[in-house]
Image (cartoon, rainbow, N blue to C red; front, top):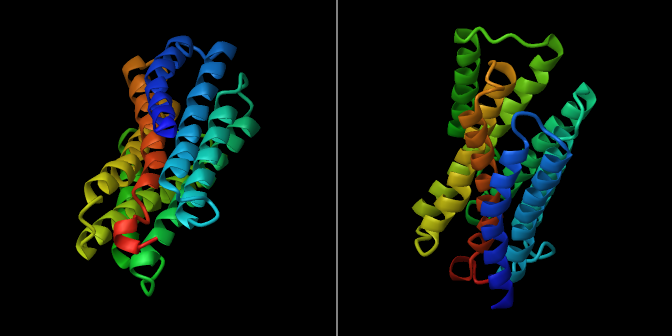
Length: 253
């Protein structure tokens, strides 16, 4: 019961510290906003650790839990690098690749969960590849229509990031839909709410961040609020998914 109360406190605390972060990061980031952001990031990582403790799905016995925790940790690193009080491209690159690493861990987490139900299926199904191509195509189309111009050396990292987060979204839905078709009904709603919705919110957050960074929307406060709110909600939901993957009802573990 104590661990569940702590989990509830951690989630509730996000509703306190995220607004504080937004308050002090506008119009420009500062050391106070950096501190509040790192508290918010520590909270979603703590939510993952508490979910592991409560569910009994330890990192040593559950590959899914271990990979999700690594994804959350890399999110924490990305938050640190992207919000450091500097405009140096090296720091921005470190933040970008930290989030890229986090998405890769999420992809492998969802794949390991898929393998429990469908061990003989390929890593990427054809419809996942189609979904990724469509999503990346939409990103490119938006950039062309809005005549977004950026530094040439950013093109490859940005496209790589777009491919990776699109793959994460496709993998999340492949897992959730697969479990629904398999007949895992007891927790299927929670899987969609934590994994599928978490992945969607992450994509929306990164999409809005792209508009802020590359489409001249740096002074758009509502978009900034949307970007931050969807991001931290996504991380909390993905951390909470540890409760519902590898359930005793389905896997007998």
